[in-house]
Image (tube, rainbow, N blue to C red):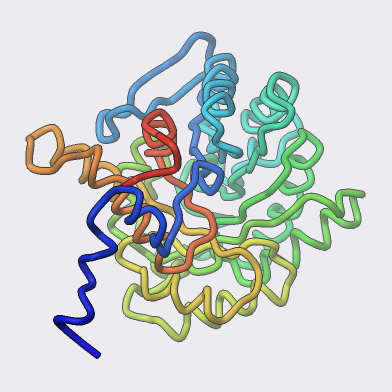
Length: 328
């Protein structure tokens, strides 16, 4: 059969018809909202390259977490900006480190909100790289030791999920072992399993004050040209005990999200990163795109590619506009 007997427009005529046959659903419950924690009291400092995103002191971070939960968003992911940085990023694994204090405060105030702690060292090191530097490069195995310590410190502070983002080989296994030995077998791991060396991270580095002071991160983050290698990374992290497997960035890597979803049975997350956010914000300010329509279109594309969860700076905006589960 075909036209004129089959007319595909029949099921597009009304909002209810379109809703009834919509293949991919987007829900607030699938969103994770990033928060940046900085030193001080009463600090709410907008990031110039990320309109609507703020560096927040712990007290403000708690209030933002409360607003997030009130909107029905189930989780936040925390990034810390310490008062002082050093060669090993010691604030990251200190029991009194900035992200540990923020985690503790949020869990006391909004106990049902899922707190995910990003586990990397670029925000905490004075050189801006994701681990311990030896001979001008990140020493993978030496970094694994402090990765385990950081995971345990975050778990003690109340983190529900830890999220290693440094792309160190063996990181997930090291974290799982450290958490289990410390008595935290129920703390989950969301691995940045396929994290590409991407130009889309620029605004994040402003927000987290994490730009490398020399060189770049291409020796440990992935080549954007590689697809099969991403599957190796994802399958290794799956085998090592990751509970959720992430692809980052999202929009330029929808094919990787799709293949990850086809290859693994565990939840797949995608990070709708800072550059993707800022491009939309900039174009919307110039009147070149309709932000209210383009944002759900982007997120539904990430969902359609196969992501179960989406980390996005748009989460609160999307939740405020939520109406009866309908986007289109």
